[in-house]
Image (tube, rainbow, N blue to C red):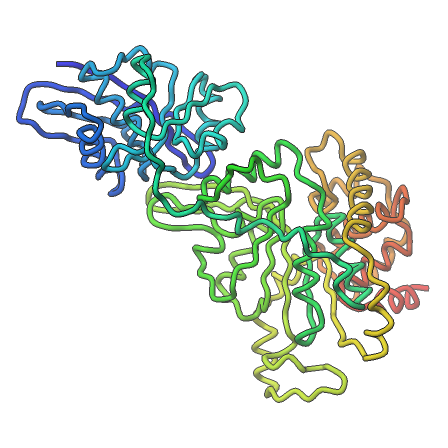
Length: 520
């Protein structure tokens, strides 16, 4: 009778908990029992590990073998426990020394031939192991670079079970055949850095709106007929954003690791960009799946941009599910196996046509949609969703002479990004010590009691009295005015900045001027 243990990590969202894998051999009929709330894929680890051991020219215990995953009350899923299970079994069978496993966490899936295959969540699991005080992490060879992104822990990559046994026995490590798998998943949520703002002809007001949104991390709504540049501008927004700092990069990379993306190139340094199709399901957008929920597009776009093109074509339930993360910056997913929490502080960009045919209200065009169809189409973007958007920008088709005049006047993304970075630096200095990094994150109470009061607040009061702004809308226009002041280098917003912010909030460049004239 013998008992040995190894260690793995169970991920609940991005939070990792150390799992002790105990293997006990004793008298009884030869069979293997796996306990500790495993899911189906984990329960099948018994057969995978047994075949891998035989393929590695070792013997599986020919006794009653009980494998326990502790804590037993924590639901566990996935194939990432295979290495820890097989190592605990081999230690119980005296093939490897149990003392070698005391400060080691093992992550990886086993093939029937003994090769070690990649798993999801290596980066957050390694972070959890380092925080728990473990000194060494053994991972699939192809993911060793991902695990090495964590400081303070020794990382060992193995390509086969035979290599792992040799390492634990301090023997020469044999060569292993390459793992014959499909290429790693690309960074589907990475922006195309080749896109340049100069490619967009005209639409100077819209470009200014994108610059303000990038500088303050504000949400955007683009409206207008088809073919006027809404999608082009949205795709170029990530190119204006500053690179992520180290903490943000670790957080974003951990989410991408859990989603299954390849991190062999290092941390995700650029703000991610997600543009799901309008047929996407609720689970793919906010997260979901059986057992403990996996991250969705809102979490994979954390610290970056979530672009919903043809927004009214999305399911109403999907759009309404964005309300809470837009305000809180996190998404809480309750499932039968427990609560999973993911970060979701993304920058939302919505693009919508004015009607199903896209021509309603366009000068020189004919809309063929019945009035009720137009009303139903626009109503899909509900008032609560629109109220959470900071800037609304309406696009107008360019005339031929305007298009020709603006072809040679486009400003590059590099020059605009430089101004955005300077504005972000002003915000960082002003908000130092608060935990906030951009104007869009500042609370209304902080705006009123801790920052200089801008001139022109009477414009916001007047708009609220007329029913044009909600209390949330007042705070959002106030934040946008601070961003405009940061872009022009002012110490605080004035009447002009408040007026422009109000106009951008209403989506009408004349709105602030009319309000100003009425107040005067």
